[in-house]
Amino acid sequence: MKNIAIIEDDVELRELLYRYLSHQNDFKCTISVNSMEDFFSELSDENKPDIILSDIGLPGKQGDESLREIKEKLPDTEIVMLTVHDDPDRIFKCLQGGASGYLLKNSPLEEIKKYLTILADGGSPMSPRIARKVIEYFQPKQKLEKQLTEREYDIVVGLVEGLSYKMIANKYDISLDTVRQHIRNVYRKLNVNSKAEVITKKLRGEI
Amino acid sequence: MKNIAIIEDDVELRELLYRYLSHQNDFKCTISVNSMEDFFSELSDENKPDIILSDIGLPGKQGDESLREIKEKLPDTEIVMLTVHDDPDRIFKCLQGGASGYLLKNSPLEEIKKYLTILADGGSPMSPRIARKVIEYFQPKQKLEKQLTEREYDIVVGLVEGLSYKMIANKYDISLDTVRQHIRNVYRKLNVNSKAEVITKKLRGEI
DNA sequence: AATACAATCGCATGAAAATGCGATGCGTTA
DNA sequence: TAACGCATCGCATTTTCATGCGATTGTATT
Image (tube, rainbow over all chains, first blue to last red; front, side, top):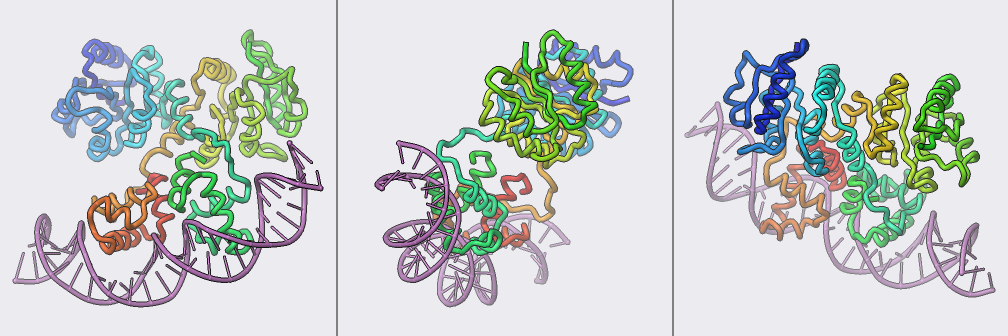
């Protein structure tokens, strides 16, 4: 039996979720409020939720901005964001903030129930459309015409690992000046002029 | 009707998938091989797959290492990785390499079919357990006790943006030596000794 | 009042990085 | 064959970074 909290300002949807989940065997709705502020004031030691279903766009304090606060007070609680949008930046922000799942509001109730079961089981519920957006975040953004050669790529990897030119030279058994030359070429191709920019580009998937 | 290619060295599983998918209305298995090399040799203009189901651990060329090559030759083909493991680094590598989905081998056949349908529909199939791992990648790793101060954080952000000490000093209207001092403190707290390491840590969510 | 730490600044030094200019050999492609 | 890109190496210079040692001020905690 899991305690669920619903934070949603659309009263109709909230009531729907509340009534639906209350009639399930495995879930109990202990909190059902329409703002983050109400949630924190209703929260007590007796009704700590195992799972929070929260809208992102709330009146007052936004759902995605309260994530860290929730995580501090309730470190063991799973948070699932509800949304109508699939804006990648927002998704990313929520996941960085500590959300464990991300559902579209138009999901059927049975699906939501299934997702909550998955969550209780250690998985993460994610609508396929959301999953696609998340995956796209990982993937190389725009392919640059001037791609790096294998050797240049090696050197870039070395930079990301925090190696100095000298260490890279040793690693690949080439001279320090050769490393310098490759770096020059990388800078030219990427249109940058510092290690820092190369590392940032690489880790942001732009290389 | 979607063309499916199966690349899987476990003959039993491959045959199972092949027969199952062949009997579906919406899918047609045009290629069914046990290695990446065989896949490329069987590939022709007539049997270009819409979706590739590929094992990760293959004999010879590994599945996750061939992703870029596949994406070059078949840019419009969706690639779904099959795996028994849920190793985060491997998952991350595949998604960066261009995979659109990631399924555990022990998924029921009906579920695999459902996932493929989702994929054809523009979503991304992802086992809940995998989704959890992916999400964990976004989230702050281990909270460090010695957190950075606001100013130190400013300086770190500057470094990530590729600014030199001098530029950071100008940006925040402090002296070059003060920037140096903050950098010293950051290095001590993070236990590193180069710009590169700080940037890497920051972009990997470890700060 | 004492301790701790954040934020600021200065001087100095050796190491590393960024860049300019040069070069050779080896493939591929026009 | 000529042109091009890749990988390799060398020397020199300027800038930036990393680090050592020192300092003052203010704020918060004990």
